[in-house]
Image 1 (cartoon, rainbow, N blue to C red):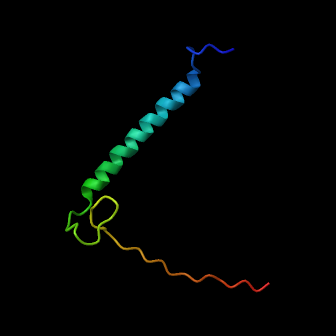
Image 2: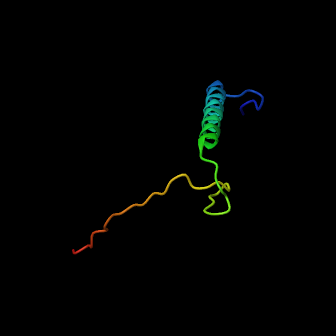
Length: 67
């Protein structure tokens, strides 16, 4: 049986790298949120109560299967 106190060094390094990556992503996300335009949140509010900075419209046709 493996000693519960001894942890795999590779797993420790991987967890530390993932934590650093997560922190960097959260910092980047916070910076992006700070740059979003601040507007009247009483109309078109998104998930976090801020106005939507852009509108995306996708136009495509779905082919009809004939086989």
